[in-house]
Image (cartoon, rainbow, N blue to C red; front, side, top):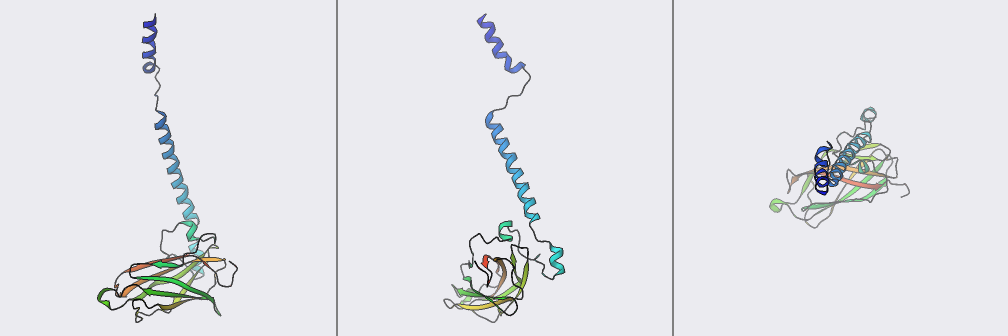
Length: 206
């Protein structure tokens, strides 16, 4: 009798017609599905938070040339994140030296410090590529006019300055600023897409 019972127990897993999967397989499969669902939700959220380009185009303030991809929480700053006002590369560093209100809009001043004199020890010079832009949490954007000339040469260890005037003020307490530079001397041909985050709007409480 015992032998017959043992034979039935051994045969039962293969004769019940059900597929038995290991718990580890089920856990890994469930985790993979959750990750894929998270990626889909993030992608949808990213595109939903992009500013309405048609509305911005009507106002002449399109920001379609802002370098992407940018995560939604930095593309539309909330003011709760840390301020990023310094950009560093092996040949130079660029920082936001100040933001001040103007008769129309505001001025952003920048300090560029050359760490090297570049190739040929001739110093560094840059051209602004594209249009400098700011974006705030209220989906507003503005374009700027830079004062940087390619004839300006930055020498190692000697800080130089230039400004960008924005004719429109952000409506939020903070904003992000996008600036593109191309090397014309010392680092000729190199391009830099610069993103400053959570800068405080001039004249507004922090």
